Length: 470
Image (cartoon, rainbow, N blue to C red; front, side):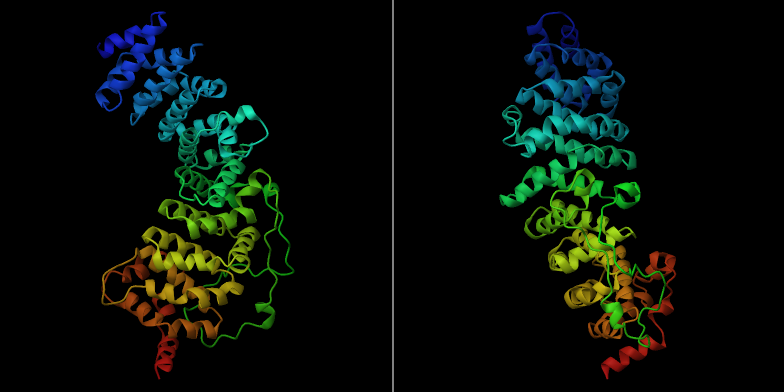
């Protein structure tokens, strides 16, 4: 049989022949880009979509399996599915079909389709709800004991495929993120599943990575993209010390000490809500604890990166919520110990994200003492020496400089701790030596933020170094 013959055999009203032809096309397209192109040329895709609407489950399975292979790594074929109005056909079949193998193929097909950027937003709008109701609810365990019929639909491969699809869709941009955030039950199911894998000591379950990456993407710019009415309730402080807005010199030894009132300043507290609803799951205390647990127990690098990244996103905005989450991480959950572990043992990307998280946290003066006490040696150790090659991306060095500036502002004890840790010679080397790091001060973000070389090297800082040495 040839591909041309197989495509032609999809049309006659003979079920056995159609199944045989679809299976042949599936096998031919498994690992052959040329076969996929030929099926497109022969107009095989609309014929397979028509077979998916058959009442025969065996024929549905054969057609879906063939189409899954046809669109794999072929964007032209993916667009053909869209142009033939195939997305509603696929989603309708997912909602009504109860055969496990067919559902595996359907979710695998959706995962393949979701990798094409031009389809992501439409799929986020149209597929999030069917995937939540038909896959996440029965497979996550959230409905266990409520509906025996739903439990029959549970399957780890189906869940893995569906979360892989949603992981792609969550990177679609603001409109895609909004569609997924607005999908009732999606976030709650994902968090329920992750918490279950932690509870059963399976944090490296293959679907957990997908789930955490979805949450990481959905937490991006969350405080900026959500309407004010959806913001969570936090306990209002009497006064609020927000992020520093001035650009002081790096080490300010002649600044006044923080007053006792500043040290004891009130700040927003993250509300302990045992039953978050929909969007509230994104920033709930339960979810923040979950991320810290994953950082502690997971051995999957991507899972840890996504967990740290989600915390970084949650603390990145300028409002009270980000401030409350930062305090919750540091003072309520002791989360700096997990960050310290990442700085000591993490891969480069884990270190980069961890340092970005610390930059966010270091905006709040009342948390400086904890950072200096727990993490200063690790931060200074990451800064490059003058006698060795680059070990971390320039972005990491810049971010650490930002952190040290925040920590030293108006605090003599913190400044002395930074100097005693050996940071200043490294900073001087970074800014003066012709080893590539001076690029930071000429062209990178410290310059854009208003900092100059004299903020780091001046009579005051040199005098401070000499006094410590003496």
